[in-house]
Length: 418
Image (cartoon, rainbow, N blue to C red; front, side, top):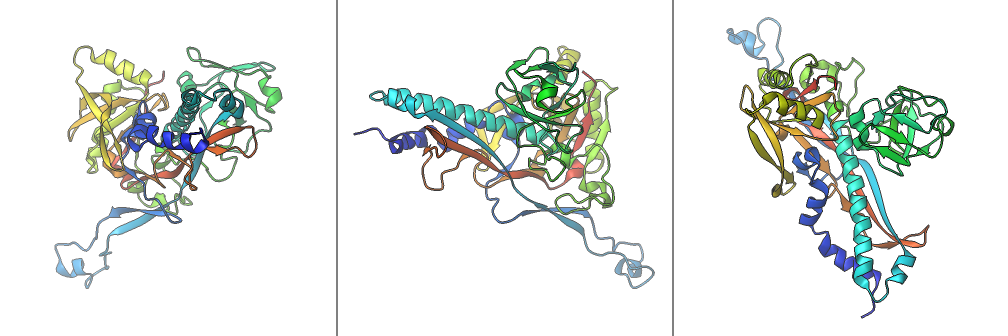
């Protein structure tokens, strides 16, 4: 039987079964892996109901409780709906037609080449999702630290952000996070993962006008560019470091009414890491929360383990899909004792180095239209002939967003400087 694109598509269907897809996309990405998930995010939006106040028809006086005496209280719950909307994220895997022709008679060789390309595209997309889940939706992945004009290299403002950069990534920049973009783009030709130095074949402030220290960096196409966010509204969006103002409209909700709608923030930069985490857990418990997982960067986890010496208690926390727990994907954690129970502290390389997140996991939902990472195959084909290149390609996508049913039970932490 002749080898055709259809034959390869059937093989890929087996290679990328639901369970194998989960292993490829969730491994090494703890926040993406551990978030509760829904895959039925259809329609224009998804209401995320938040009850932020109980009925106040209560008093030692029946008349006051009922509202027939004195000032009538509100006898209904205070409730608002975050009208969650979807964002999209794409990744394309291509294999040149010449490779297909050269491998005639050796179908396995071409299938391996195709799989390698698709695996890479899945990694790229999954890494982007993990990064966005921690951040504020503006699309930023780092800042410019040291830069001398007319140079082809710059050093990241935070070295740990180097985990967000790859060779051949096309970057854009703005003066502040989410503001209008500077003119121009530049492609990454080198990444030093020990020093946080990013290199290009072009001079940075020639390729991007007025490129300077303090600039915020984005992958091309991800930046808010002074307008609406086009990336996932991640933990930083749901748990802002400052109280929203009166004009706030986050998925249609003015959160300034009650901090139950925007969670908690605590500056623990001067505390020992374990003490800061315990304080954050206690702040959640004070308002009725039961936090069970904290995410911090590896550089903070390393210090935590070193500070605890031989008193560490290690646990394993499993990944989850919309079908439930995944027994063969897990993440090692350091367990600390909180007010309401053990809190599993998990290291995540996409977590900003000086931020931590104390979460009650069952209050969060990663809502997607289909699997978080999926093939775009409405016509039933995973492999397509490219319309603009001499190649075949697979198209992958994420469509969804992050929601929270009770932000107040979750705490954003300012961690010690690194």
